[in-house]
Length: 319
Image (cartoon, rainbow, N blue to C red; front, side):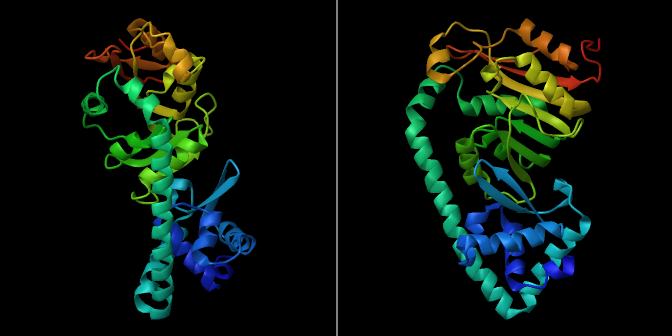
């Protein structure tokens, strides 16, 4: 099946394309100048052979290179390496790949233009909220300090939004899964993260109340300004605990308890922040051992950073 998949030059071009970045099926068709049904048939053969992986995101289907990070077979990575060598030694294949990459650059530019349009449409609301708390730069510096130098391993960024946290931790993590419920935000994140290696960051649509991952499959889980959207923060944290290995960590950046009721209506906040005791209870009950929070109180809304280790014993923090 693998040799059949590699017998067609179009499929070889597809493998070179997705080695650079994850692409929608329509984007692959755009680069190749072929109909989407025809490209879909090629993709089906590659996926059946275990050389690529596809996933649905709303009405779109995205294609990425198969790799051990995605549960792929080691041979898939070897094929990718052989194709890179083939491009160096075959002028015709190299010319096709170069032309494809030029079209790929147009897709990158289009994604960035769409992201900028989204930012422009929502800038006023975001700026209003930012004025109430510490600067994003200050929060990021404090988050890096709170996490220290320990390896992040496999990182799950829950509610990735613009993808900024995935970008921030790209050099410190072995692999990042950037999850968001909003298709619009995933498109923004995809534009922001498309310069990173294709096998480093994985964008996934999903909900923090029902994470579609195996238990104990991550070393670090991050909630950055997300938990206040949860109707049941306790359940969200228990679901996060399920996917964190024992000894792994969770990092939560969110508002301290406050009285800004207007945020419920204007920004859909389900919770008006969290007190330290409340968060300690949530984390302990979920099976984490929380440390005292890092507090940033130089704005109307104080921002807290909670770091906790997975103990493997829900309801029983270590002493």
